[in-house]
Image (cartoon, rainbow over all chains, first blue to last red; front, side, top):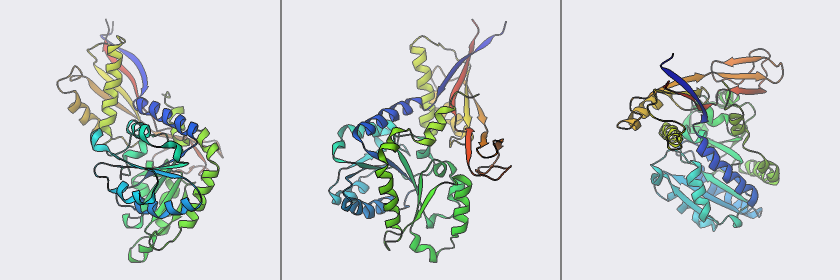
Length: 245
Length: 116
């Protein structure tokens, strides 16, 4: 007789997170809110980008809200408070200084967030291109940001963040003439990871590419009912195969 | 270091089963399956597992991680293939319209316990 035996468990490690993320997704469906998870390394310009697009979206009568996450400080929320929209800061130091947002702190934030006042909710994740890509927070869309100062090989170095994104925003494009940055190499990298990724080149300071991005976003917003019906496509594929051996 | 959350979740899942009397200590080993398209690093998981279980009933439990390659099917030519480096292109017909079948998994497959 064998001295040991194997007992099958077959449980996803991030099962608890996925369950909470699904609760959040149902809440967004019920409230008809398009939630967008913004992922990038620190300093890529996510907050500056929001400062640029929020007034434009307001002119289009889209009621926006922001949940900003950082390990510490409320600086991002402070910067966005001037727009008179609901803004809430999550500091993950309360959750062990997590380098990414998980579904639980988002759910906790949503308990006090005025959801009836927003149509579109930006969730600005902690600046990090690795960890946030793994954690479903109930969003309908994911946008990855990459500033040209970071180098064109980032999609190859952090493939999952680009693989699970619906859109890439290439920021600080006005600086490109001062850098040895090859757009060709960037797009070659992106095509290897996510050939269908929608990309926008933008400069918030020079107002380059903003209208094109807003046009895309408005299109997504008008298609909101369809987007909200489904789990995020990339999350879904992970679930589909969780029991494969 | 998102592996910390993952190790915590692994322990919570098993502790839950122990408190429900579905399992009991000792657990000799925990067998994980980890897709290569995830961002979890096996050596980080091992290190944190040792740190988190020190002085607990899991202290002598082994964490055994089996990596799962990225397996795709080309939607155009229907060929199956394993992706050795992250490049989403079919090596047969060069289409980029692919279905990723495996490679995103991260689950506790089984545990090994005394055969009583």
